[in-house]
View 1 (cartoon, rainbow, N blue to C red):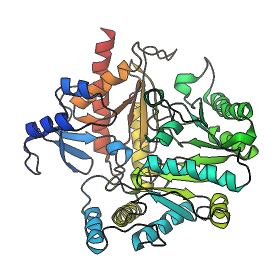
View 2 (cartoon, helix red, strand yellow; view 1 turned 90 degrees about the vertical axis):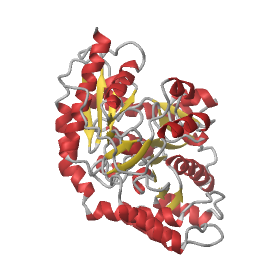
View 3 (cartoon, rainbow, N blue to C red; view 1 turned 180 degrees about the vertical axis):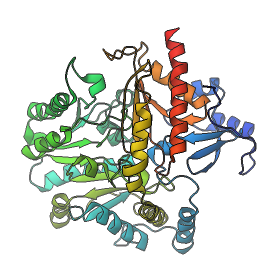
View 4 (tube, one colour; view 1 turned 135 degrees about the horizontal axis):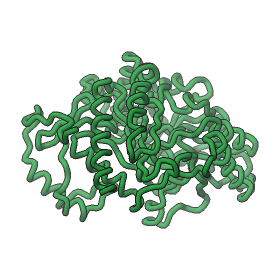
Length: 469
């Protein structure tokens, strides 16, 4: 396998930029998220992405790059959709902005709330708009605590999440998430949030423990924490149907059923964070539908507009919505851009594409099974301990010993090496610790999945040489 997995034609179409000048300005003025700025500068600066089409990106040096991550898990319908740009243009000319405060609304927001409710079914008739997954989860936290106050149970304030969960990067979102480096930098989590083990069989199962038994043990960690805190103090449990940034952690069969039973037993609200899993990625419209979860609140973002404009939403189940509306009075919460007309118009057009092109069914019946089949072909690689996927979410675990699942030294070094090797081959996949994860656009072809897997195999080969020689 050569290093040139993907053709990199020079002079890819697009605007002409002075890339060196842009890179210098980026280094001088732009603070990137989740980036070591000093290290980025020492390594030569940013790769400047200038154009995209379908599942492909072009950088300013002319390289053509397969985007195996759909941006940040979000570009579900692929890049270059003219009708989404046209939907934004048309709305901006008619009504570019107005707020949803002061007893006002605009047609796109009303239509989008109705459409989301239709996709979710009769249990979810109300939707609250914001701008990002972080803000949707902030809203969930605010609403959960308000709900229990209205119920006359003001002690029920504690929210339980999982380690390595990702629920956003605001103070509330990062607190709900279980990313310890984020907590350390900002003295998080805020009071009233705690974390339990994640359902990560490969990493946390006892020797000889099968996935079903492990899933039950992982779910029981929730009940143990509830009893430790006192059920009268616990407001909600939040979890991604499949943990994305935590390493594409697909819970063992039975895990979610047990979690749900525990929540009902102790009268605790269940929040299914669909920011990554929503809008077709798991082979259903939403991940909770794929996994048989019945949540009370559903934050969503990313695939709602396929990333073309910032927008998110919180779907509010009947029990919570009825209390909020009938007893809550004014809900002192919202954002300047809640229900932004142009963002809502783009989201409506995006959902229309997903429906018209039957992309949910395509993930379930065609490209999802094909990705699973091709990933299985990597299972025999000497440094691969497990492959797993659900729909168009996939992961490859890198380890030093298949039987014991022991890791290579360096706390994520193997994953970082592999990520760097696949980037050099102009294929994008992501390292979450020592797991390589992928999340391509829902329009990805079999040939493009082949390129993704071939690039990953080549990167694994190069990583093995680095680690074993």
